Structures are given as C-alpha cells and as structure tokens.
Amino acid sequence: MRLAIHGRTLQIGSFKQRTLLALLACSNGAVVSVERLTDALWQGAPPPSASKNLQVYVWHLRKALGKCDAADRLEYAPPGYRLALRPDELDLASFEQRVTMAREQRDRGRLSRALAEFRSALAIWRDQALADVVSVPALYAEAAHLEELRLSAIEECLDTTLALGEYSAVISEADAPIRAHPFRERLWAARILALYLSGRQSDALAAYSELRHRLSAELGLEPSVALQETQRLILSGSSLPEGALLVRLR
Image 1 (spheres, helix red, strand yellow):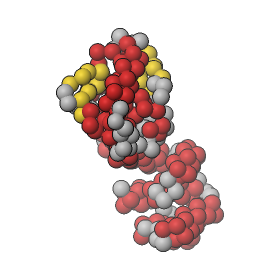
Image 2 (tube, rainbow, N blue to C red; image 1 turned 60 degrees about the vertical axis):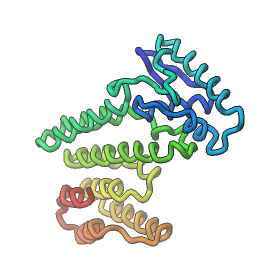
Image 3 (cartoon, one colour; image 1 turned 180 degrees about the vertical axis):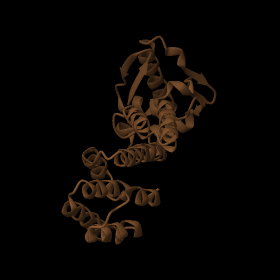
Image 4 (tube, rainbow, N blue to C red; image 1 turned 180 degrees about the horizontal axis):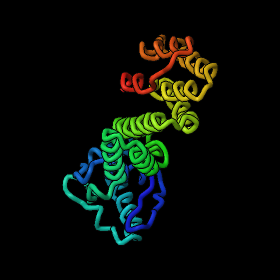
C-alpha cells in the first residue's frame, strides 16, 4: 500500500497499518467505526486489547502522515475514524476520468487519442489493486471491484490498439493479463485476432485451442459462440472484421 501526499511518497510499514489505511481510503471520506475496523484488522476475532491496539496503529499512521504535514487528515469522528480526502486526491478518480475521456474519443472515431488516454489511465496502476492487503476478507469486494475496473480498461485499450492495426502491440500487451486471468475471453479474443490479422494463422488457431482446453479442463465450458465463429473464419482463411467480434464480447 503506497500513499503519496503533496508530492511525497510514504511507505507504510506494518501489515496492520497498511490494512487500516486501505480500509479508510476505500471508505471515500466516510467514518469507519471502531467496531468495523477491529473486526477487519483481526478478521472477525479481535482480542480484548483490539481497541487499544487500534489507537496505536492510528498513532503510527498519523505520524507517517505528519511527514507530509497531513496528520490532521486522519480524524477521530465517533464512532470511529475517517481519512479526509477529496475525491480528486484518489488515484481512482484520476483513472476513471481518463477512461471516460478515452471512451469519448473512441466514440468520436479519434482512436489515436483514445489509445493515448487509455494508456495514460492504465499507467496510474502499479499492479493489482490492494495487492499487499488483498488477503483481508473485509477488502475482498473492494479489491475485486477495482480489479474489474482495471481489466475492463485493459480490454478496451487492447480493442483500440487492434482497431489501429497495431497487432504486434496487442500480442505482447495481452500476455501478462492473460496469464493473470486465463479465462477472460475478451483478452484472448484480442490476442487471437491480432495473431490472425498479422498473418499468423497457425498461432491464432493454437491460441484458440489453448483457451478451449483451459475452459474445458478447468471449468467444463466451451468458448463463446462469437469465438467459435471466429475460429471457423480463421480456419477457412476468410477476411475477418475484427470490430464485429469485439463488440459482441462487450
């Protein structure tokens, strides 16, 4: 968990302090009760000393914030605490604003500008959201929501890259998200299309076969109808309108 205030980046030390920071930051400025914080920090089994221990973690977090003259941002507000942040101070707000701008440019047919905005939005992310505190059950839902936002932006960025004919970029940029999310069909679709449209028919078919095997062996599923249709077109060597498949997969 990383915190940047007034241009300075703070490294928050202990796991409990990082969890506390994540819980407060994800509340969007709302008060988080002591009961909820202790329950989350000790995963449903807080010790008798939990409230006092929480005060210690709050003190250390305030001390860290004080290095950036921001100790007063962590407020005690019965029945708990709040982190006083403006929406525009959160990376998430900047990310969502840039994604919105990218979609507007794409819908106007300005694909190069759209691609630049998508890449600018994704550059905000270092890795999966809340990666170092994702084991905390109280943060499961928020982490999943943030990861879905990131993945959707990656998929839209790949779609736009594909539409611009930058097939090599799609092939390379799809690899890491596919490894992390091997059942995400839209990621595979972009890669399969990029391989085929760059003249690598056999590699495109191999990628489809790999996805089909994974889905069948691990989930008992078949690829979507859209991907099956695409495979048939690739087998026949037909001209393939890449946009048609990607729209169906949205």
